[in-house]
Length: 247
Image (cartoon, rainbow, N blue to C red; front, side, top):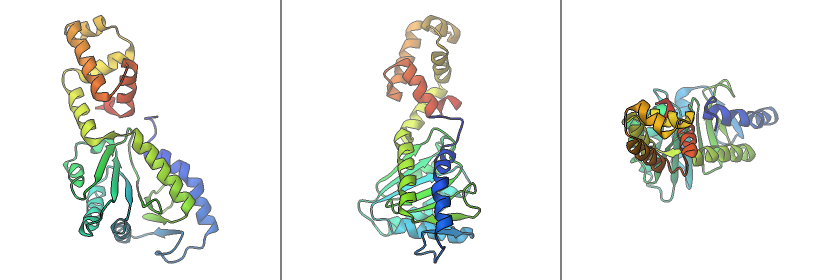
């Protein structure tokens, strides 16, 4: 996965031709039944999110950016879902590495039964939610000059959902990410990964870090175990793709 581009930019860039085709071919009708509807008012966008999430029967998949209002808005929507006491609704929240340390994010995981949170490898600048793989709410200035857009075109929603799920499967669970982040912050973890990436020998790396070769190898082993990597190269790749080398 490329860290140079934001996850959401990559997703939405692939979605843009599909969304634009809907804009060109469909007459915009009332918000409740339109194939694509543009929302210009922020409060209406938040209310629409509450309604869409609150009606979920099977799944809610979200991209949550690092912005001041994102978590409160998402939290309110999930509280509305929780109030309905739904069963078997799976909630997936995918957010950026910069959000991993925000306590409010962890609390979202307890707001509704079945909430799962993962950390993407790149910055998430835009917000999106897909409900039951049937309707999407996208907040993206790069696609539509508006507060948000509600999309019900089946082909567009399916494509967006598939892209989000691909990103989801590549992302790290929040608790695992936090554990890895903490480990790398201590005991020269980040420097060890960087040296692995540079191809340093164990002897040279241990000397540089002022530790024994045995200690160095043990810490390399610990990092590989936490990352679920089978090789040192794979460990460096996983850490880089998860954004951990930037901490």
